[in-house]
Length: 117
Image (tube, rainbow, N blue to C red; front, side, top):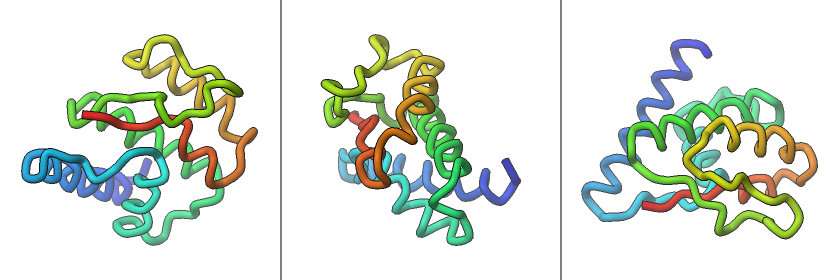
């Protein structure tokens, strides 16, 4: 990814960290909320292509690795697309997202994974 995208991801991570520390809440529930932050901090991003999926995966991974939040599948359509058995295995999560991203419409795909403290 380009350097500007990395800076924008760092801005988003800082907002989430500060939300958690100050309010005891992230201010996000699912991938759709991360799209809002990308629209706010990374205005030139094309939100309809594979780049969005890859950026959301990268951002989700960094959220987990920096211990800001954990991945949850509570909002996922698990009766249609069973989620990975291990929410800590990001390789499984990436396969799950890549496999199901194009099977869902623009709004529903944002619920494939959720975040919790």
